[in-house]
Image (cartoon, rainbow, N blue to C red; front, side, top):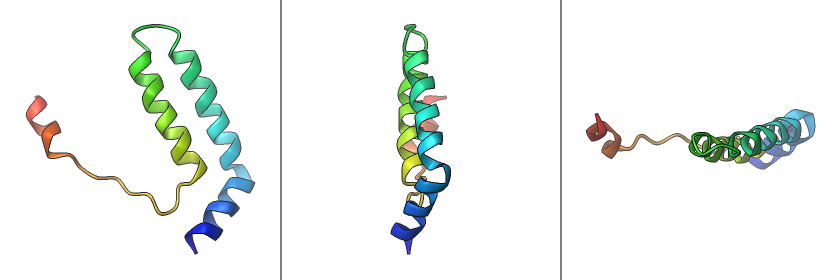
Length: 66
């Protein structure tokens, strides 16, 4: 079911969303300050291509950074 939903998503707008994220990522990576944001936007582009079946995990190490 997830594969079918991913293909349907890809055909109905996922490819356009991923291309927009890719273009914005490349534009952000022009400056040194924008590189971390560009890397995260590249990750979002991959998520925009195949969103179904993905999950978000919390990282306990991030709590110690504050």
